[in-house]
Image (tube, rainbow, N blue to C red; front, top):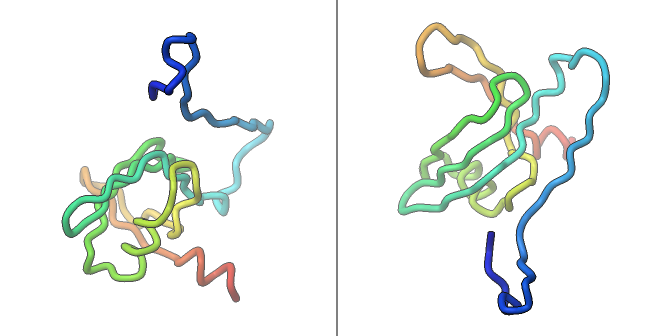
Amino acid sequence: MLKSKYENSGTETGKFSYVVLEKGMRSPQDTISRILKVRPADGHVTCDLCTAFKGIQRLAISRRAGVLYQRTRTRRDGELFPLQMKTVTTESMFDLCASIDNDKKNEG
């Protein structure tokens, strides 16, 4: 928890989220990830994502990724990840993902 200026009064500030649950099976189309934490670094951004079928995943996005790097870097915790990922293969410990640009898809 972050300590507030009112620490002596017994109050604190912190982040929280709401969870909305719905009964039924999830359709495969609902695979947009939500950003848990964005960590900017020199030349790349590391972000933790909550994904629909894989749970929590960590991604490193290089500055060479251009627009995706810029969009990810400016996102805040809790926002949607600007890329929709579809896993192509899962045979190794690394997943190969095909991607769809969510922002472009929503604009058109």
